[in-house]
Image 1 (cartoon, rainbow, N blue to C red):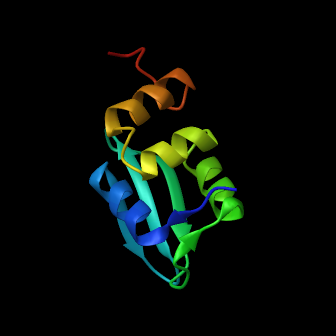
Image 2 (image 1 turned 30 degrees about the vertical axis):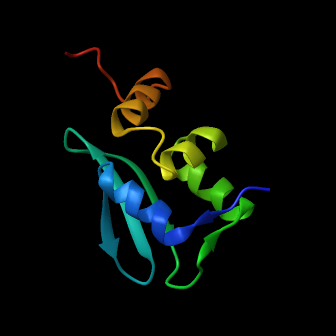
Amino acid sequence: MASLKTKKAISNFLKKGFTLNNSHHHYYEFWHEGKLIAQTYTSHSGDTLDDYLIGSMKKQCKMEKNFFIEFAKCTKSKEDYIESLIQKGFIDTSSK
């Protein structure tokens, strides 16, 4: 069973291009070249991301579970994430 410290994981997401959009929850958005690619959120409470939350957030971020955990722990970079999104077809590079 996987678990991550929420504050550390979110801090690492922000370092890699996600932005915070505060409302009732903390929304984190990933934009690439002016296009919203992914959005996830956390509640104001909760010190740990458990398996259920990791599962929900990884889907919203368009990541596999292992990639999500590595990204949150800073062993995957923003460039790794963008490459993954390109391979999955979420970022179109055909016009470049």
